[in-house]
Image 1 (cartoon, one colour):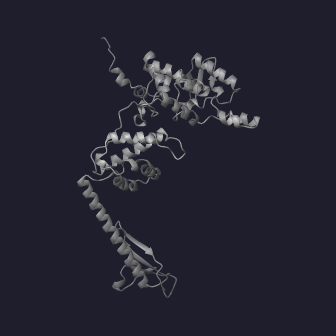
Image 2 (cartoon, rainbow, N blue to C red):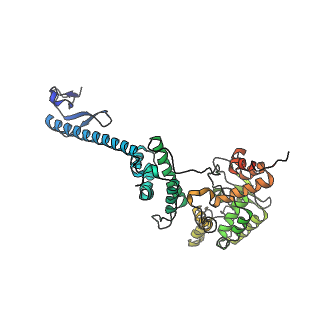
Image 3 (cartoon, one colour):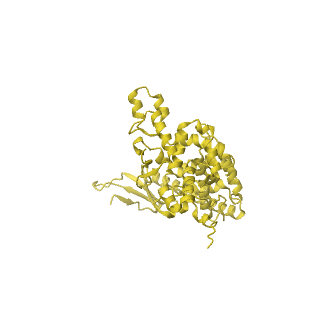
Length: 394
């Protein structure tokens, strides 16, 4: 055996290592054996040249482990005392929570906590944090600048608040507190996790008459296409000229969520707008309707311009300017915390689906929205709530 114990009791926990092939069994290195912080047996190789040096290394390791155990015990006692005294702060809980997470997002979520949450709520007693405190944090984040200079993306704000909600849920599991102030309201959601807002006829009329939208023909066409087809924005952004059947007034929408591509109906207004757009931009068979226009304008050669028209635009190039328009005209008094009530691009799909349901029934709404299950359509359009208002007159 290549390891052997030193017989003297003084050197308990020290092993000598030698080669089996060595007839003299000369010691090559010294190993120390001890129990770690979790009481598991560990054996480490040392740089010791003799057994006394190895013993000194072992004793230092034991002293450090003893200090660590005492610190953990003191921390546990302090934590217990803080819980009893109801004085545990959110920062102290976060310090306990984050090391328990090992998933790829864990370190990013920890950074988000210390960059965006700690300065506002970190020093507050966790049991005293209220829903109003969380809403105030959300309002602060909406006005906070990102590292790029612009305001934080609403989705980033939502993720930060969600991270806070998870910390509170973990705290409840640890019996640090008994309630979560980050209230997740019962809102209308969909299979796409889309917002639940539906525009009224007056709001739709207001939307189409907004100057900021009307003067930007690409945004106006994109939003009209989202509305009249009821398609998801990711499907609309990928429409090519060849996908439009001008005779039958149909537009083929690409497959989404592992589903199949399908044909969406297009009314006369949309067909006319698409025809004018195609002529104006000299688009041909394989060209994308929503190609990257700014990149196209910067192109220096005709070959480069032809290639760019065969590329779909980035969704962010539409979502960001449209978000500014929605926030200016519809979302002034609605924080990102109440995301279900904010107007967004996805509002077009749900508004159109709701109008189809009201005028033609749930089956036509299901087909219009390209749902595979009518239960999804009922959830999407909040049919359960709507049924409560119907007077059957039987």
